[in-house]
Length: 607
Image (cartoon, rainbow, N blue to C red; front, side):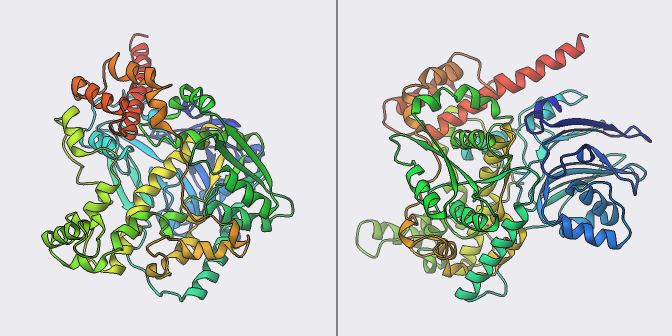
């Protein structure tokens, strides 16, 4: 299991076994960031209590927490945030979690009390997967494929509701797991495990659905800048080189600008470009780099160069995750790792500060949500034909939650029912898009932020973690610092967007660091021309995976209908790249990871 995450921690491997009751074994791979000495090796045992921790991530307020503990007489033997977290948990156990500001997934165990706590940070930046085996125990890790090597045998059966979810929205959100018995902790969730199959899950933090104590515009802008500056200064703390990702947008240039002012040397920045692709942001990123006077690293690749790396990138998917912007994220991470060990990113800005078009679409005709659905459909139809003022198509959905559920989908239900006819719908426990109350402008905006935070953001963070950690690069996310989130929640959402664009406060802030003419207006995203690749250079891989081998899961897919679907994409009648890539990733994962685990268990069985 630890061999599978060697790339996450190339600097040291360690193991620990419960000396009293033989109830727990921990394995760890370390990427050394703070206190590079062996004093920071894990799993780490306490010198103050019979406890141990395995911890992935960073605690950004560890220095203040350490001072608080030292005032209580707690002793330390290292300078690591790991030991601070260990001792904070010794002091307060579950009640320690609200005190933490960081990104983390950890397992803390008190071996006299026989009490295990698994926990995940407030934003879900670091992953934590688990597999509960009835009558046996629990297995957990930072990658989903680790669960396949459980000592009691691998999970066998696909959950059809989770498979449906994956095929619809191209990733598997928390708390779901593709194979029965598996799952993942939600952001801000912990699991407490005791002997006798006692398992309890609860949230220690959740994004509020309502804003409170709202600031005025100037006050809000200054407060967000202060919070972001504090967050970046905390996240620059490391005993290894730190740089930033730099795109042509708003968020990462703002993070870079503040970081550049927080250090006494030119900070290193990293950008990937793609020749002759309309979404290439490298030119705009270069303008930002010149304005900010940073040490900029740019790598521009051709499509052929990127396609040649597909076979290197597909094995990264330790779980099915069909966000194809994993490709440029992996490439920029690989480039950055040649120069730094830690990179700051701008992830989270769109979700917290209304950067996407979805919130604007949902609220463009906010007053019309008071009408019954048939009236809204009529208003939309009349507007479409020019008989009245045009309405946004979001109004035709049953409710705002249904709009968000469908706008996040990448495969239409009528298509899915043709080539996977027997799959059920979404599981009830997937509650990301559940809307309650009366749809007013304020409630719609607050709901959209909640849905983006627990929807789109989780997919993006999963992609970044998967791609960057494959390169042994730690990516930190200042926009998701708890102080920044608290500031974002005190801004009136209605002041952040208009019909044209969002993130007004972040745009205003960026103008304090770069000339206004440098700032981009159009949001392009971070992507590659996958649809074109699938029709040309990747056509052979698609047809090999989907039509030359048995499909996983067995008996679910109608291959004849799937081939007709593929032909529509090949002939250019429809752009079905999302669905084709989603199916490719699933089949590759099954052939590569699932089959490898089966062979492993068969070898164990036969000696």
